Image (tube, rainbow over all chains, first blue to last red; front, side, top):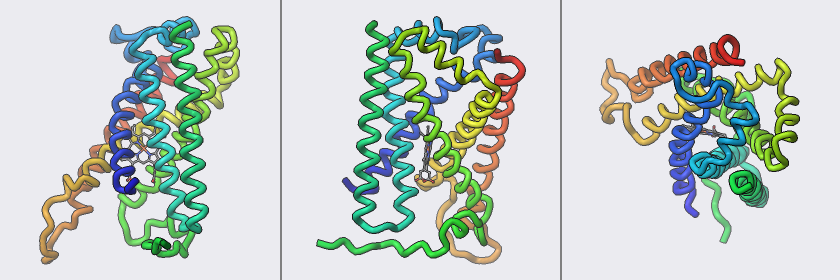
Length: 120
Length: 147
Ligand code: HEM
């Protein structure tokens, strides 16, 4: 695929992450501030709360979207950095293939976990 | 068919990358963007494994989370939050400028003139102010209000 196209996907993924990770950070790390305003739960990483969230369709789906977009954005960004080392073409091919494989495997594992706990 | 290389060899290595040289603030913003991006990526990869441990049930999950109770980890998590705030806000600035907005129309460099980098600089400053506010609120939540 054309490199410019992959880069546009990198930007689009960044925009999706901005929204989803923004929500994630507010729920998980600005929780005390939110809670004092009457939103969210008092302890978002309490085991009961975590498992209750895992069983909600909204969180299951957004977790998977965030997983995929963040893996793509992060690994593609990492690949770009490595490409600046101007290695031999063979090494560049190997790096791209290896990072793609890592991304696919991690996406499969994380998706499995999200769906498994949702259904259990 | 052999594809011809379009890029030149990087002769300066790491030092050439870190030093801003004659470039301005934005060059360091880029350095930080790269460092925070890689930092978040590293955290994220571990985060996938840590949070997926919930497939073994609540007891296993609680034991995994207990591993991360120490103050070092809490500080580490706060660093990730700081990196996120910076990367997100600077990332928004990059969207705007890389898509060609906020830098004005091309014009002849007749003195006195303002180049594109200096024209977009207010964006950088506003982004950094918002990132700073987020970092302060995050710190309050992590260390004063949180549990
Ligand atoms: C908060 C939402 C995020 C936004 C708005 C965002 C935006 C961006 C933008 C605009 C770029 C530069 C693209 C370019 O100039 O070619 C970038 C690079 C990068 N991002 Fe993100 N990003 C976000 C989250 C993340 C996350 C969660 C990760 C890690 C998993 C990450 C890892 C990276 C990496 C490794 C780079 C490459 C840095 C470089 O080439 O110097 N970003 N991001």
